[in-house]
Image (tube, rainbow, N blue to C red; front, top):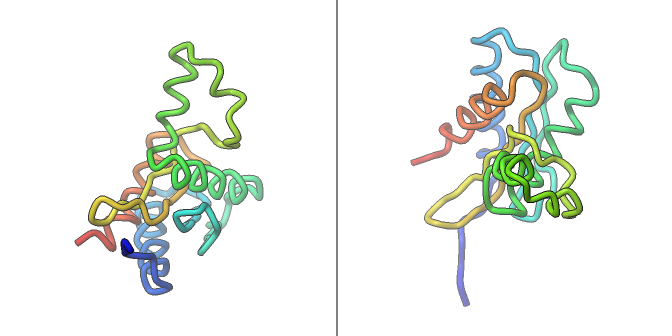
Length: 134
């Protein structure tokens, strides 16, 4: 039987705090979601000024990243590159801003961020993940 690391409640708290700090340092009102490897929500923070829909979009970006075991922007790039069949894939947020959490080669979840420019969303997600990277 194989074993793998999993995200703890402490990890979720650290990810959300670090991602929030990055967003606030830059003056960005975003929603930040953390999901497990099955795309199930573990934590969500919506900063003041972020619209309600950003909570939904951030969660879906994280879910897409976790299930695909890759950054959500890769799907956006495939579609923009002409692979239109991905429009019918059962993924609801094929936009940049979902980043997988990889530990010892295992995708154990993902962070999704929504409400600023796509690269900024990903920047906030990566800052959160860096809080638990060792």
